[in-house]
Amino acid sequence: MIYDEILNKIREYNTIIIHGHIRPDGDCLGSQLGLRQSLRLTFPEKEIYAVGEMANYVKFLGEVDVIADEKYESALAICVDCGNSERLSDQRFKTAKEVIKIDHHIPVDNYGDIEWVCEEKPACAQMIFEFIEACSLKMDLVAATAIYTGIVTDTGRFRFDSVEPATFRVAAKLLELGVNVAKIDNELSIESLDVLKFKGYILSNFKLTDTGFAYVTVTKEVVEEYHISYEDAANQVNLISNIPNYPVWALIIEYPTEIRVRLRSRGPDIDKLANLYAGGGHAKASGCKLLNWSQLTNFINDADNVVKEYKESI
Ligand SMILES: [Mn+2]
Image 1: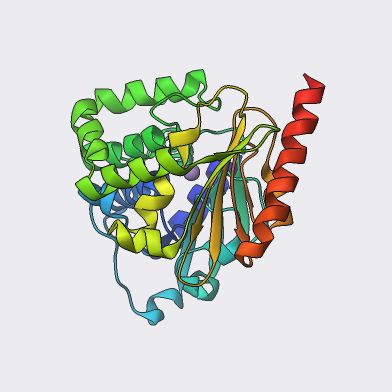
Image 2 (image 1 turned 30 degrees about the vertical axis):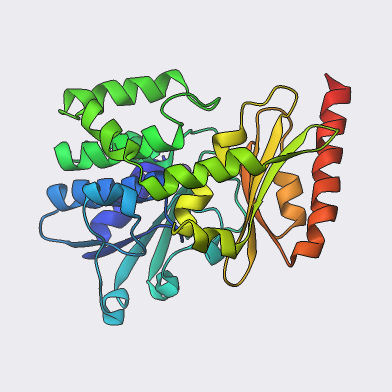
């Protein structure tokens, strides 16, 4: 059983370092910090760390650790919520003695010595809870809040296709541990005036193709003009998610060094389209890159073809 395999490794090591992905979201940090807290409670004699980037909007969950390279020499790395090793935040995981991957993305590469991947799970944080519960590890309100936040953010507040009965059962158990649903919702809903104004930009500037693909392009000048972070900009992808007859949409943002596409669907699978442009992810939520703005026309054509095929098939 995979739970035992992972638990045995955790028992074997005195230093455990939990990694997430770059530009972490609520699920990534919720999984990292929830697992860290549970392992710290259960194994107080071990050194348990969570490393990588922090995201402002989930700062209420706690801080990530800053650790020296030497810590890796005899450490077990547990990497959560990340399908490809390149995307892992803090590449020092490669210097750990062994690596465990716990994830719910379509695998891009198999970077773990032990891998537990459930593509159908709506949130990695749900997997973390299921692991903690199955192994009778300790939980408290700190861990529960982190895990609940991970589930809430990755399910679009329990609205996405991937939500399953188990998601609500897990949520119920987290509430029994004292999780404050309204407080977490408030934390996640706080929005700066700059972000609010940027939403106005998206809603005024999205484009629609004749076939049924909706998209917005955001240049780095626009990001600067609205004084928002790239993360805040990227988080607005679902502002154009509900247009009838536009089952695929994208938010295309020019970062300082590359153009990143957040691609979403409520119809056809779009991960293969993302694969064509140096990306990947989930069937209905993927990310990819454009080399320059002149690639945009090709990308729109390819997206249109996906939509066209889908519309012909239904
Ligand atoms: Mn996730």
